[in-house]
Length: 411
Image (cartoon, rainbow, N blue to C red; front, side, top):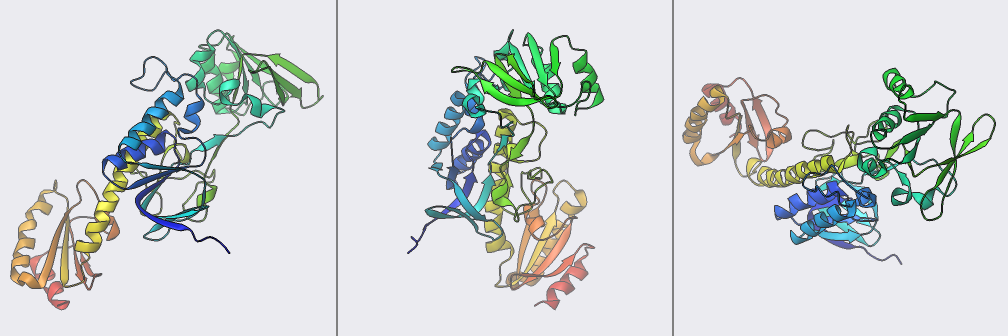
C-alpha cells in the first residue's frame, strides 16, 4: 500500500538552490512570506565549483564560489527560509494553488519560483567525469580565466561562445589550443570572430578533432584528441580545459505547462513571470544573454519582490476587488496622468450617489498593473462594473451618465 504523502502549505516554493534561488529566498523571507527552497543536489549550484570569483561585487579578494553561496544560504536561513534537500518529482502549476511533489511530500504554494538552472553539455570523453569543475575542466572563462594566467589551456568547440571565450582566455593564458571538428579554416562561429581568432598569436588549432579522453593524476594533465578522419590520437598536454559545446537548461519537469523556447529555456517578462500567473523563473534556466552569479542574484531579487506583490494583489483581488455581496465599481487609473486624476472626483460623486448600495475600488496602475492584468484591462483610465464577483461591464469612454446607467442596470 502506497504511503500517503504529507501535505504542507507555503506562500512560496523555490525549486533550485543556486545563487538565483537563494537570492529569491532572501527577498521572500525578508517579506515574511513562508518560503521553502528545494534543492536536489548542492545548495549553491554550479557556482560552488568555481575556484575563484573575481567579478562579483563586494568581494575583492577573489573568494571561492562556495564562500559566496554559503553566505547567501545563511542569510536566507536567518530570514526564515526552510530548506529541503530532495528532488522534485512532479509539479502542477496551472491552478490557483501550485502543487510541487517530492517522493514523500506534497507542497501547496501560492507562488512557485523556478530556479533549476542548467548543465553544460559535455563531450562524453573517457574519464571526463573525473576532472569536472575544480579538477581541470571548466565551463566559464569569465569565472576561471584569471586562475589560468600564464598557463596552457585547451578549448573544446568552435561556435561563437567557444571562440569568443577562447580569445578572452588569451588575455591571461600563455597559450590557448582549440579543438575544432571541421576542416582547417572552417568554424561554427561568425566570420568576424573566426578571423580574429585565426590572427591571434596565442591561439592554436587542432583541426578535424574531437575529444577522445582526459588524463591526469589528481588534476587534468592531458586532453587526448582524436582525428575524425584518420582516428589518430593526439595527446595535448595542458593545465586546464574549457568546454563550450552548449548548455542544457533543466526544464524537463515543466514541459507541457510552462512555455519553453525552441532551445528549452523559459521566457519571462520584466518581473520574471512565466506564461502562468504566479509562476516565476530566474537564473540560467531563463532565456537570457549573460549567465553569471551577479545576474542570477538580480533575477532572484526581482522574482522575490514580484512574488510578494503577486500574493498581496491576489488577496486584495479576491477579497476586496471582486467582492460578491454588492454591485462593484472598479476605477483603474494612472496617477501620473492628469485626466485620470481629474476623473477621480467624478468617481467620488457616483459613489456618493449610490451610497452603501455600491462598492467602489480605486486602483492606481502606476507602480503595478497586476490587478489590471487580472481584469484583462490594458488601457487606462477604465471603469469595470462587477456583479456577484464577476465582470459585468467594461467602459473605456468615461462619462458620469454612462457609468451611472451601467451601475443602475446591474442593481
